[in-house]
Amino acid sequence: MDTPPPPRRPAATSPEGASVRIGALVPLTRPGWTEAGRHLLAGLELGVREANLTGGIGGRPLALAVRDTAADPRRAVAAVDALADLGVAALAGEYHSVTARSVAARADALGLPFLCSSAVLDALAEQPVERVARLSPPQSRGWRVYADFLLGAGHRRVAVAAQRSVYWAAGARVLREHLAPRGGTVDELDMDALTPAAVCDELVRRRATALLLLAGHPEPAVSVVRAVRGDRRLAALTIGAPAGQPEFPCWATSLGGDGAGVPFLRYLPARLTPLGERVRRDLRARLGEAPSFVAFEGYDTAAVLAAALRAPGGVSWPGVEVAGTRGRITFSRTPGTGVWQWAGAPVQIADRDPAAPDRFRILHTDRRGRQGTAA
Image (cartoon, rainbow, N blue to C red):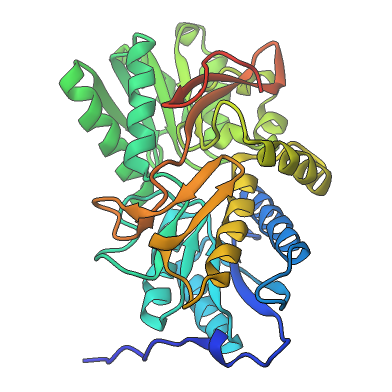
């Protein structure tokens, strides 16, 4: 039986005056979602810069050691080991849920604090762990909000165009379990077996009123959207993308007007905090485009870790309280996740305005803000 390595606490042995390093895990190459990785890294970089403007960590500068995960769990675990050998004080980031789960397990085994920025799979850890926390809401919460949105819009016959993965399967299960007691059905269409044209035929045969894309971008999601939009039989069908694909500019670039009017989940409030409005402007300048919710998650990650590393006695998630871009951030235990969780993370449903696809419409905000405003 293998014995796990002893917990490492590299920050305690860092030379006086040396930087305090955070290991940043982000998908920067394919098959990772590189646009999400770029936004996540921009937020992390801005947050670190601002932490240093306010004194760093006990007078020592905060720095990022960036590693590309490419959405590969094995590559990410190797990066965690390498970052631990570099003496990082904590780990941050990751967008892809399956990759983040592997990072969480390895980080906890090594005794490294890990703040997951953006992955939502409920069971981020198989068993409760002390060193791992998460900013984004669990998938079960966000996707239940999405299911309620569908019901409110009158959809009872829902189809999902799904690829095989733990993440997509978990999302389909949440939808099915939430819709079934309320008279809804979820038909699963296997995107590893069906062509976009065959998907259209199935939608007609099953009399679906909504199709949800539980599939990767750009393919097969783009081809399915084009096929559905071009099929007169499906003119009244609603296309949805709960995983958030339409959030990023590449969606609009790939689909133009066909990509508008596709409701998706994002983790923003109806209105940002005053800090969030300032950070929005700075992120736009840094990215050269409107920042996604993932960029705000990156900034908030850096702000939370800076506060946690400044605390006497080291990182303790229950003691963290930070004014973030999207609200006040604290951590508590949430059943089924295994990690410390920001329970108050905002959940919003938005789409791209058909009249102006570069503009977002807020269709629903869970527990916060007003509905029906433009962002």
